[in-house]
Length: 400
Image 1 (cartoon, rainbow, N blue to C red):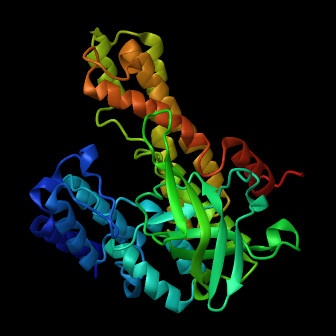
Image 2 (image 1 turned 180 degrees about the horizontal axis):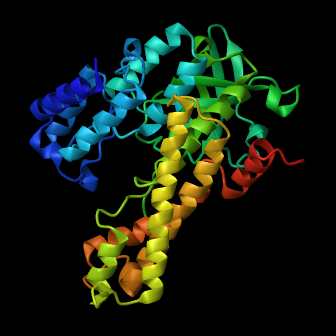
Image 3 (image 1 turned 60 degrees about the vertical axis):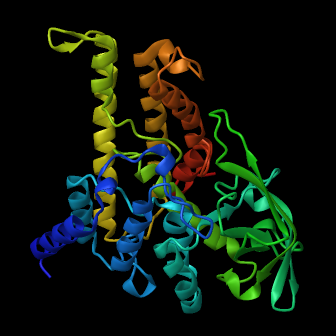
């Protein structure tokens, strides 16, 4: 099919199938978190999800046999453009199933594992979380101590994880466990999947500085996981784990150039628009010359970064094969997002320091919390310092 014909058919299908309320900005309380425990404040959110899933367009670049749309990079761009024209909301807002474990399964999973798990990600039937970091194993992730012991066709798992984003809403977890304590730390780790809603698992949300609780502590007390759900080889999970981190960093960094960073919301108005509204104009220009220069520089950097990410995708001819360049995108993208919120703070002044009360507008309070939340961008998914090390060693080839 020619690209022009695909565009015409896509436009027609979207016009016929996208509900009217799905063509409006996404309110915070309508954000879809699918899965077995999902509730939808707006019923049309579920209608839109089901229609897009049936079409294969919740994850359009995945193969059709696993629930995706099988679209090429060019077709995906057309789909994005046509959805933007009618202001259509995404039917499935990423999540770790789409951005992390799904791509890892496509690369490392068996055919049975792909068919069992990928289709449920595309349909929104199962929502995923990540079991990587532990209280004493953060940047030194390979020092993890959560133990998995073979018991017939299962593993019995004991230990704990921290910063397990969305564990309180998740159905399944992909988890790093130690299956051999008598070898070097990188060699005794296995990568396993299991249902998080079982008696041996307990979850405790962690409140952040922003007031939200997207992160959790997760405890395993004789939790069970089927042996068939090991991804890759037993004791070789570090290979899968590192690859998945590249997918994560691509999703965090690659989304910032004009879209969003993980855990933060993009203001619907541009920085320039917000600045003019609050500070006024002089001779048709923003009154504060220094701020005007900084906003212009930020917008130029943002646009350049978006084009770089796009060019990298086109050059790779693949949307599921990140390289160590993902660390560059993660590093730059998250720092760019943090700068955006610092500029918003300069524009709004003390109005963006409100937590609650009649003296502050709701929009300002929301942005205050987003500004605080943005501080985690350069920590999650590997700290800025970790990314510098990866870039130095793996991209620039500098000596240790």
